[in-house]
Image (tube, rainbow, N blue to C red; front, side):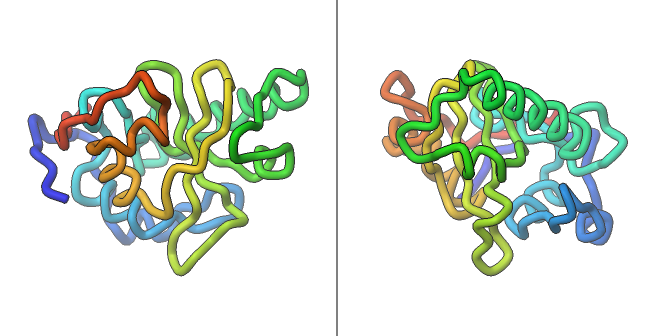
Length: 168
């Protein structure tokens, strides 16, 4: 996919640094590492914020990802996480966030569903209202978000995003 860069990111991680980052003991998927080493931290399609690969960054995969992971754990424990249409409590317990929409959805990896160098990606609805399977890689997710498939990923109220990136 050809992504138009509107502005560069001030938070770009090196590929070697990304290779050493672990989330809950797991390596980062290749598609995320490529994105983070090329484009860095920023907003895709004017809507989706991809967390930084730089561990010290306040909106990093480690800091923000762990924070949102806590929100998911609380929602499951307090019985307000909705697992339909594609999940259950076991799946919710394996999720790790790497991006969020400005409307409140989270994009998460299922750390136990690894294929090659990728983890299955799910979309957690705003206010934990639903869990939908989204893609097999970040590249596939971004392509779906820029097509009519966005409705299957984020819901019927969405229209395709433009393939743009704004560094934050």
